[in-house]
Length: 162
Image (spheres, rainbow, N blue to C red):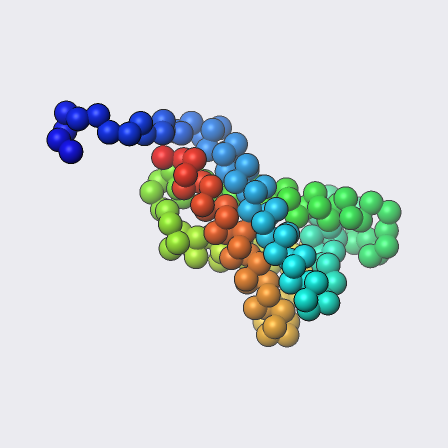
């Protein structure tokens, strides 16, 4: 194709920080939805219970203490942290896409970023245990679920943000 020929329409560039933030949050919500779906499938086969660590972490962060597993509103608090943290973390991936850090390698890097955010908040609040103290199968499961989050989030940010 010569320089003068018209090719297919290219998406317009998303360049304002507010737009990148919004697209990142949207991609993160979709990434968390995919991660949650794979967690439910995995839990069906393994019998592993749902984790309440995100909700306990949010409760500790807002200063209401660490609630019991059966505390009223625990499921809602858990989902708020699960989706909220994913949406906010995905803003990092959106800025990566905007600055040309894209594709599977970026997704691999972002998997580590998401794991780092989780572990920092969980251990800072005293809710979580250090990951190297977990059974190996729990470490693998957590990494695989975060990789699903990173791949789906990255797929959307790489397509939406140029």
